[in-house]
Image (cartoon, rainbow, N blue to C red; front, side, top):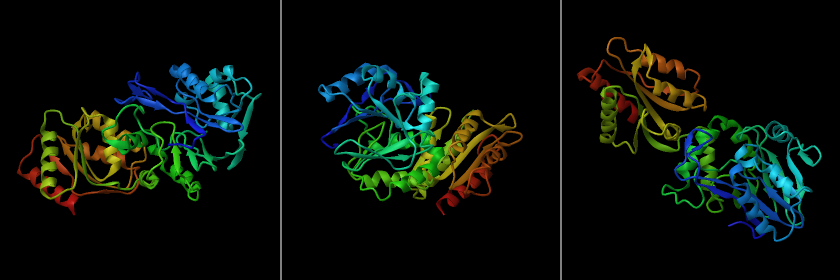
Length: 386
C-alpha cells in the first residue's frame, strides 16, 4: 500500500522477450510510474513507448479532471522516459524536474532539453513543496546511470528509488520464487558493477524513516524493509549472501561435465549446504552470474580451446569482471588432451578482480577423469569445505 494521495499509474509488459536486449523475462516486466495528488500534482516518471496510451489513461483516471503541475524525471532510460514529450503535449503547462544530466540526455534522445519549462535539481537535497507533501531529491549517480535522482517524500515516508530495489517481472504475474531471485538477477545484471555508488547513496538514506519504497520496476515495498535494505547492503559490498558452492562449467564431450558432477557429489557427501551446477552453454547466463555473486565459493571448470579457454567460459568470465566480481574463494578445473592451458587463461582474465582466494593446486584432467584427477577433485572438495 501507498499513502492515500499517492497513486500507482504504471503498466505491465507481457510482450517483451528480452529486457535491455539481453535478459530473458518469462514473467514480463513492469514499468512503474506514480502520481502525488496534492495541492500541486507531481507525476514521477513515465513508461515505455509502447504503453503511452495506457499510461496516460491511468493518469487521467487518477487526476479526475485536474491537471498535473510537475513531471519528475528520475531516470532517463527509455523504458521510463519515452513518454515525456507525449505527456507534455497533453499537459503543456507542466514544469519538468530533473538533474542537469537528465536534461542533456533528453536532448540526445528526443531533440530538446526543455529549457523553457525545466527545473534543474542543482543541489543535493533540493526541495519541492506540493502543499502537504514535501519532496527532497538525492543524487544517485551510476545507480545505474549518471543522471539518476531519488525522491524522498517526507510527508508519506516514501522513497521513490528509480531503478534501485527493482526486479524482473510484471506486477500481475505470480513469481513462485518470491522477490529476491529476480531482484538479485536484475541487480547483478544491471547494477552490479556499481556497488560503491549504491553504497554511497544508501548512506544518504540512513537516517530517513522509510516506510515505503517505490521502485521503477517490480512491486512497491512496504513490509519488512530491513530485509530488502540488508540484501542491497550485501549485494553492493559483494558480500556472501548464502553459504554454498557454485560450479560453473563448460564441456565438449562430457568429460569436464563428469568432473563437475563428481565434485558436486563429493561436496554433498561432505554436507555442503547448497551445491549449484551451471552448464554455461545451456543455462541462462545471467542466472549463473547471479549465483556466482550470491555464494562465497565458486568453481570454474572448462576445457582448453585453441590454447586458451572454451568460448562460453570466456564470455562468462567477461560478465563477472565487467561487474566487479570480487571477494570469493575460487577453485579451478581445466581439461586438455595434449596441452592444458585453461587455468592459465582463467587466472589471466581474473587478475583484475579484488580479493579472490584461489585454492591450490588446480585440478587438471587430461581428457577424462582417472585416479590422479579424481584424487585432485577430492582434495578440492575438502578445501572448499574447510
